[in-house]
Amino acid sequence: MSSDGKKVKSLSDLPGVGQSILNKLIEAGYSSLEAVAVASPQDLSVAAGIPLTTAQRIIKEAREALDIRFKTALEVKKERINTKKITTGSQALDGLLGGGIETRTMTELFGEFGSGKTQLCHQLSVNVQLPLEKGGLGGKAVYIDTEGTFRWERIEAMSKAIGLEPDSAMNNIYYMRAINSDHQMAIVDDLQELISKDPAIKLVIVDSVTSHFRAEFPGRENLAVRQQKLNKHLHQLVRLAEMYDLAVIITNQVMARPDMFYGDPTVAVGGHTLYHVPGIRVQLKKSRGNKRIARIVDAPHLPEGEVVFAITEEGVRDAEE
Ligand code: GTP
Ligand code: MG
Image 1 (cartoon, rainbow, N blue to C red):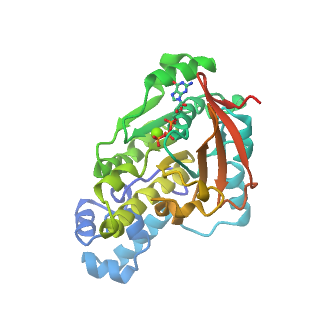
Image 2 (cartoon, helix red, strand yellow):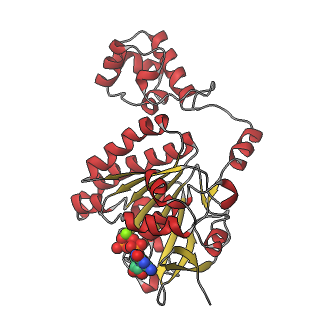
């Protein structure tokens, strides 16, 4: 967000960038606000064939648009305090998360099949709609489904259970099936536009974030490319969370390794990729019956430990003893 509060979403929105300069920038490989913001004026001027003063002005505008500037510690404090939380439906799980799923943050839910990642995503896309005093943000959700496991029936059941009118609850969830990794990335590219049009969007879900990438770039020989693409995708999601003060949830299936639960779970199969991206990582694990165990990984500001919750007909709840 720029200092006057107006949201600039791409290079073409910068006042100093007309069509002809835009073309030159893109041709020179500077196709995003970030790329321009971190460029040196000399490099940009030479590469794009524009005057040095123009390059300086565009870089300044891009930095302002991305809010790249010194902030005072007080501003940082205020931003942090403004962080809002979405209830999961389980007090125990909310407690573990320091109150719920945070805005301005990307939260990764990882765990084996059936551990509850998708159910939690459904629940949060309903709960975000609750008013503030009931643990929601009075907002809408975007659900990007890569595995075809979204069920409107679950949304209906979960919303009824918490007293929301099911049809309006479903109306407040934008759904898109991502057919491959390129499509998945393109959807996120376009999200800024949707969010600008509908600022009520307070939650973006990608379930699962990794499956297409794993399927399309299998094996060690493709690891570097996969990693590179996925990282770009993830950083884009993180930036979305920060820019629009919304919560991002991604899921990641990692195979069950009993010996790993208390060891380093980032070593779990396929689990490395998200390690270097900022955010909160929540490991989910199956327990007896409808019970599930959640544990936070690598979050120094949150208490250690694990909690038990349940997946019931009504949705995510505290487990009954
Ligand atoms: P993968 O996507 O396969 O990695 O698993 P996941 O972690 O997304 O698991 P998911 O959230 O789909 O959890 C599935 C579990 O939720 C099931 O094993 C059921 O126990 C429970 N569940 C799913 N749908 C329902 C439902 O309609 N009613 C109830 N009571 N439980 C459900
Ligand atoms: Mg799932």
